[in-house]
Image (cartoon, rainbow, N blue to C red; front, side):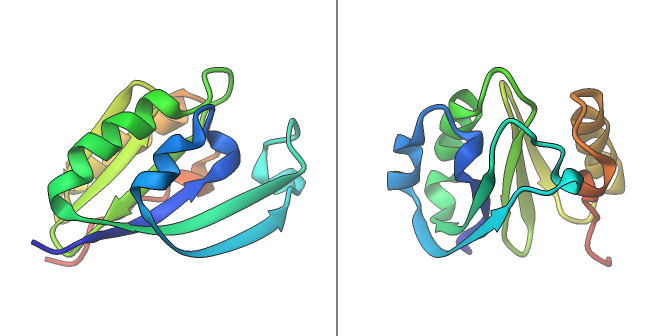
Length: 126
């Protein structure tokens, strides 16, 4: 099975210990702008991560419980076949060819108040 790659914003985590369970490939620090819609913090520390397929479900659940309870965030990672989209207390495991599964995850993110441009999940071409 292929490893998963994706992103975790460090400031989105109440419990940062989960970062020890993923391989951090790179880190980019961005100052927060109005477009980010996160005025309670001054920067985003965006980690590009990799994790093994056989640990992806367990790590997804741990991330879900580690996300900030006060604000709406998500993390995600994918491989060629599937995509984990992780919100606080809800994990979507998506077939990357399924427009309906992506639509459900997007609708959930929007219902939490996450800006539409941030939940622009798209299926891969069939």
